[in-house]
Amino acid sequence: MNGSPSTDQLTRPMVDPFGRTIRYLRVSVTDRCDLRCFYCMSEDMTFLPKKDLLTLEELDRLCSAFIAKGVRKIRLTGGEPLVRRNVMTLVRSLSRHLGTGALDELTLTTNGSQLARFAGELRDCGIRRVNVSLDTLDAQKFRAITRWGDLDKVLAGIEAARDAGLAVKINAVALKNMNEEEIPSLMEWAHGKGMALTLIEVMPMGEIGEGRIDQYVPLSLLRARLAQHYTLTDLDENTGGPARYVRVAETGGKLGFITPMTHNFCESCNRVRITCTGTLHTCLGHEDASDLRKPLRASADDDLLSAAIDRAIGLKPKGHDFIIDRRHNRPSVSRHMSVTGG
Ligand code: SAM
Ligand code: SF4
Image 1 (tube, protein in one colour):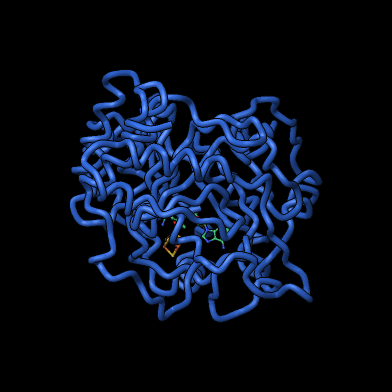
Image 2 (cartoon, protein in one colour):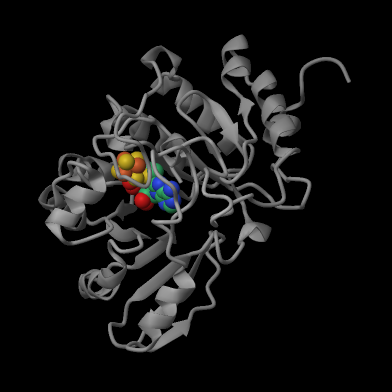
């Protein structure tokens, strides 16, 4: 077929070869971070040259193209999204899609270190919920995990977000011999403040200067331990995401489990990811990558971009390739989590 694509082609919902409609876009706005969590990055990470990054205007155009093609939810992530210079310009411009009803939700995942500064403005821009990653409430352990982070700053960020009226969900990566014993108290703390807690299994992404086997603890084990002291009732709700939730009778709170290693959730995956250089990854656990920067820059209209997105969605893999065991103590996927933002 010759000529320009029809509006229908530019706006047709994205359905992958396994019948999954793509409604959720995660956008890593920077690969940089003000922390160096040991399971995410090596201490001496090499970051992308700034010249390789899409501008905020280009990121907006890219996100808007996905919205035109049926994306209803966008999560900004990183690296640390709040360290990207002028990131609020992007948040504010994307929030127009909330105003028109084209987008149901704009949200972000953050380490919380800059939240105190931005919470009010985020709320102003129509953000209603944020996920804050926090693996421990012990200041020394926090420093050990993040290599130099300040727990008090994150706690202040969480309070500022709550004061601004944002719902906060806490995400914690379960780490062997590090925070596994602390999970009950972390949960009690979060639930005591009305915040859900989601536990995440460590995933073998990127070279971090050590093997994963020493970090990995299966959540099935932690769940069994929690069940000895708490009444956990499975919740039926399907958020379309990878988390499975339980209600904890004793606290009244919600506890989620993201278990890529012990339970594969790919069959209902409705999401894709773009990086700050405009690379599209249709699966977190695969090496697949499609360059969208080139078609984005090649033309002022979105025909080439839309066609490139369609081609990539047409290749979305059925599921991920994660393995951690003694024989596979190497990254399953070479890129770091900070490239795609989890
Ligand atoms: N900097 C922000 C933060 O920490 O929330 C956003 C980006 S961070 C890469 C997103 C999430 O990925 C965090 O909850 C982090 O704990 C998690 N993460 C990083 N590396 C991981 C890994 N190898 N396995 C599992 N989760 C990981
Ligand atoms: Fe930074 Fe988030 Fe990775 Fe920690 S998990 S190093 S806060 S990007």
